[in-house]
Image 1 (cartoon, helix red, strand yellow):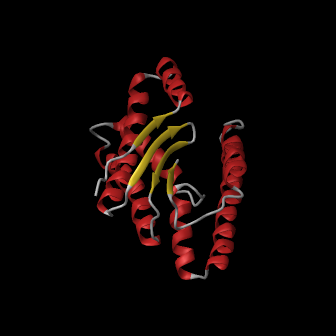
Image 2 (cartoon, one colour; image 1 turned 120 degrees about the vertical axis):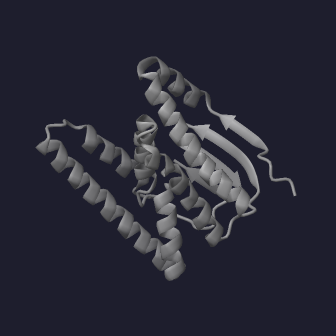
Image 3 (cartoon, helix red, strand yellow; image 1 turned 30 degrees about the vertical axis):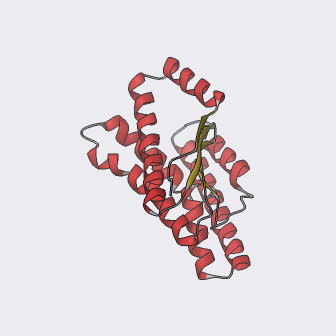
Length: 196
C-alpha cells in the first residue's frame, strides 16, 4: 500500500509571514523556530507512518499545519497526537548545544499541550475523557476543563502582567486563545490531524 503524501501545500500567507520574519527577526531565531516546528511535525508524521495511517495531504497555513489522513481510531489518534509534543520536546534536552532551538521547542511544546482543541493537548484530553465516559458526557467534561484552563490562564496572565508591568501582551494572548478555542468541537476520530 502506498503511504506517500499525495499533496503538500504551503499557503501564500504562510510564505509571507516567513519572509517578514526573516526580514525582522534575527535569523538564528527564525531558523530555530522553523527547526522546532519541523521536528514537531516530523514526530506526528513518523507516528502516522508507524501506525500505518494513510496520509493524503500536508498543508501549512497561518493556523499551523494540517495533516489530512484516512479515518483513525481513538488509539491511533492518541498516539499520533502525543508524538508531536514528545518528539518536539527532544531539543530541550540538548539546550547547551543549541539554546535557541531549545527555547523555541519549549515554547511550541507548551503551546501545543494546552488542553484546547484542536491543539495536541486538547485532542489528547478529549480522547482520554471520551474513552473514560460516554461521548456526550465526555464532550461536557472536556469543555469544562478547557474553559477552566482558559479562565485560569487569563487570570494568571493578568496578575503576572500587573506584577511585572508587562502591559497588555499576555492578556491579549489569552483573549486570542479564548476567541479561538472557547467553542472548539472536539473529536477523537478525526480524518484531519490539525497541528497548531
